[in-house]
Image 1 (cartoon, helix red, strand yellow):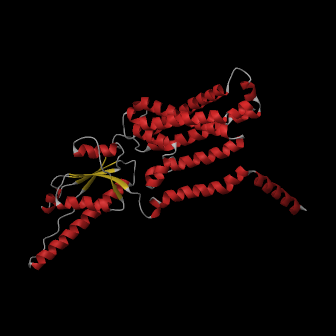
Image 2 (cartoon, one colour):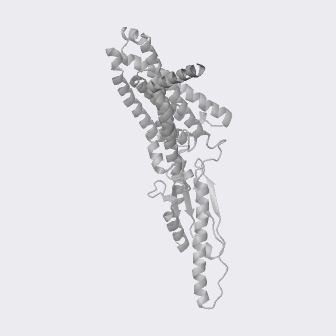
Image 3 (cartoon, one colour):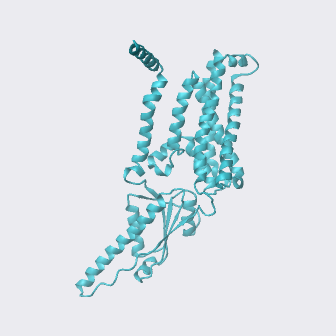
Length: 392
């Protein structure tokens, strides 16, 4: 008897679950989707036994044979993608520096003038690797790769010379010493915690999306309690309701992100006040875009439960692809491009420009334009979907 009752309870639960399609989606489909996303990230990056190609800028001031061979072999490496067409200062050293500071390259290699001659003279000059330590993989890989490539070049040249001298009956001289490679971090100097800005931005944007979609669910609750019907029976229109909700969500979201960054300043030394103007513009725009997305989801869904399920799936997917969970430099180039469809990536890039790269506020225009444009489009679509409440 007891076993039969327990079985009946279990069967009732299974039947309820079968008819709750969103629950089935969360239990069986979402885990597979996220497994696929993370598998794609790591099978194209650090977990695949190979690294994502490193964007390398090369300023070769040496016109000797070894300098030319070094550039050619690095360009042919599977681990490197040479960045061409560098713009900026006329001075090669300034160009190499600007390529890293403006995010065109993860690392810049500077081969000094007369480097080949210094190798042959037995007093090799130093090479310089300029890098951005927000990418914690690229400088280490490039330092090892440059040293390995130089060693291979010198070994090949020594072997060729030894063969030539042996044919002449002359003993080969001692191979020249390997040159030192100076790795210079252009961006971490003077910063209490070099990567805190990226982590603060990633986490803040992810939770901003969760809180905005949760708060936007009040529209569905007001529909269920007929509060929305009474509001629309007054002088308010649906446009007024959506605009008011959007303004509320934007203000709350901006304060939420500000609290996160205020704590980052207090606890980790992130200097928010120094870039307060850019921070406020970036934060308000990000919050506005998140609020627009939340209202779009609320207008598209029929119930609060449906909104909760859809928002969890969407926010987690955007956060995984956009860099809130995993730094995008660990992803393959194709996965990094997929991440650009999320405004997580655009927001993180904007905050990184401010607090990590120290770029002027005017340089935020691409990120601001994308998020502001997205907010407008999503609000227009949400207004179109909201006509169902007016007709009801």
